[in-house]
Amino acid sequence: MSYQSHTPESVVQLEKIAQIAITVTDLHRAKDFYLNTLGMRFLFETGPLVFFQCGDIRLMLSNSEAGQPRGGTVLYFKVEDIHAVHEQLKGRGVNLVDRPHLIAKMPDHDLWMCFLKDPDENLIGVMSEVPQPDRPEFMPK
Image (cartoon, rainbow, N blue to C red):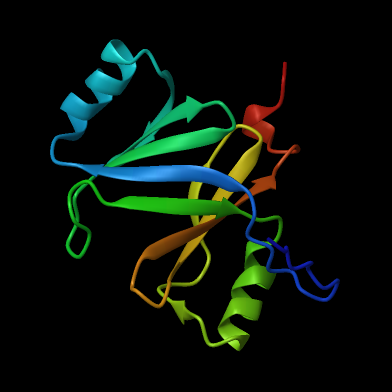
């Protein structure tokens, strides 16, 4: 087996899985199961999304939406500069679903995401945690 090295001029290096999403039919029931039955560490909830920590990988639960089958899984790759990666993927003719957009403001970073599809129409997420150390509302007292 051989591995292809990355060229220095490429900012697209999707290697680190940061999050996996699972679609469910009942978000409240799923949250209770993962939290109380499986004992996973709850992180946060925002809108119709619930997040748990699984080692270095985050698990996201969401309700089934149009075009996404129940039980569907989405891999999210973590990158440093989501805007640069998005532009390079666009230049390569990748089937992009959307542009980078802010998902949530966390205590010390902003969570950004965008999505693309592979040749078989599988959804792939790209995410970036942009540090915000000077956010006044989160400064230590």
